[in-house]
Every structure is written in structure tokens, then in C-alpha cells.
Image: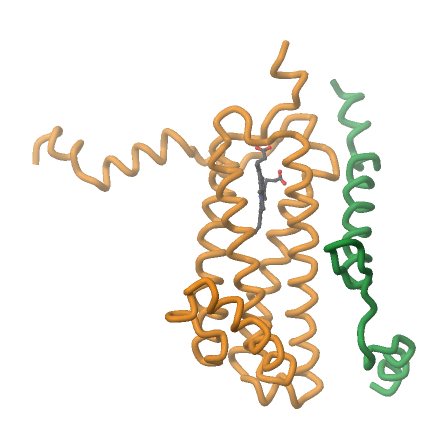
Length: 60
Length: 205
Ligand code: HEM
């Protein structure tokens, strides 16, 4: 328990969040990170080879 | 009872329709076309799995109640599992919908599959929002007092009062999850009935 508490203390969560203001858009940095992760996951899903795919091609 | 009378029974008619549209080998197929072996096709099932964990952890929270999930380490843990599986649920759902958008997966009579996806997305957002105001802490007080003016401006406030904790909890744990689960079931059944949409080049030849 104490270990996890000290681990959590590494990331200060007890202060106001950070926001990005861009014209009419207000976006928290936390949400921006999630959006960037989703875009990266999407691209990775398209590019990374799916296991077993080449094996099946050989059998054709 | 004559044969034609049996034919007209609603049980007979529904059985025949289901048998025709969704035979067992379509409901639980053993193989898929080659183009399905891509990571992008994993995200529908990833969303489904996350939804399963959301429901399971939500049931545990319901068994023990707010004092437990605010006041005990095990309660905090299940509460966190509930929150983080929701995060994964939305994350994978968005990647899933981007994927389906990019392949125009509504082609070939699959419009209803896409539309059930859209409505599931909306129902899920409503479920998440009522969850935020059902926490029974200062966070939910803050969120509901921020939300009330917007909701009241739409006129919905006369029947949907975000300051009413009991009502919001009922929407969050009964009505909206029921809607989300039924819509998801319809969505997946439609995918099974239609089969996976072929890539563009396969259709245009
Ligand atoms: C609770 C949320 C959802 C769940 C559990 C879910 C689940 C699934 C599953 C398991 C599949 C088949 C496997 C796959 O191709 O990934 C699928 C296909 C599909 N989904 Fe979803 N989905 C959800 C939300 C959405 C949303 C928000 C959209 C779009 C607005 C969408 C559009 C589609 C379409 C068009 C297909 C058919 C793909 C095809 O025929 O190839 N889904 N979904």
C-alpha cells in the first residue's frame, strides 16, 4: 500500500489541471494526451503485421 | 391444428426468419476472410471486452454501495477498475469507429450496423455522464451544478434533474446500461448477419 502511495505521489494530481487554449477550443492536456494515444494506436493497428497472417498466406 | 395454422403462428414465423438470416454457422463462425487478419478488426471485440469488465465491476460496486467504494481500499480498487475499464472502453470504441469510418463499413446494406454503433456511442456518453454525477462526492456535486443550467436550457430539466442523485443513479445503473447493452447486442448480431464488409478493391472488380 505504502509503495503504491509513494508511486502515486510521483504524479501531482492535487493541483488545477493544465489547459490548451486555441481559438474557441479549450482542451485539457490530459485529454490531448489521450487523443494523441488514440491516433497512435489507430496508425499502429493499420501498420503492424497481425500474427499468423503470413503463415496463412503460405498455405494458400 | 392444420399445417397452415402452424405456419401462421408467431413462434413459427420468428424461428424461420432467424434460421434463414442467422444460422448457427453465421452466429458463431469458425473462419473469417483473409483481410480480417489485421489489428484494426480487434477493436470491436476489445470494446466488447471492456464493456464486460465495466458491467462486472459496476455490479460489485452496486452490491457494496457508496460508503464501501469511498471508504475501503478494496472499494477504491474496484472503483478504479470501473473507471479505467470505462476509459479503455471509450478509447477502443473510438479507434474502432475511426477504422469503420475509414473502410466505409456501412457499405453493402450495413447502414443499420453503423447506425446502431452511433446510437450505442451516444448512449454510452450519457451513461458516463450520469456516472460522473452518481459518485456521491464533491466532484459529482461540482459537475452536476455545472451541468444543470445547460440541461435546463434544453427544457429536459423538467423530467431529467441532474441535481437529483437518486434519479441520476437510476439512469446510470438501470436505464442507460440496459440501453447500451441491448444496442451492443443488436450491433454485434447485425455484424454476424451481414458478415464482415469486403475491402474496396474486392467489390469494384
Ligand atoms: C459498445 C460499443 C461497440 C461495440 C461493443 C462494438 C462491437 C463491434 C464488433 C465486435 C464488431 C465486429 C468486429 C470488428 O469489425 O471490429 C463491430 C463491427 C462494426 N462496428 Fe462496432 N462496436 C461498437 C461501437 C461502434 C460504433 C460507435 C460504430 C460507428 C459509429 C461502429 C460501427 C461498426 C460497423 C460499421 C461494423 C461492421 C464492420 C463490418 O461489417 O466489417 N461500432 N462492432
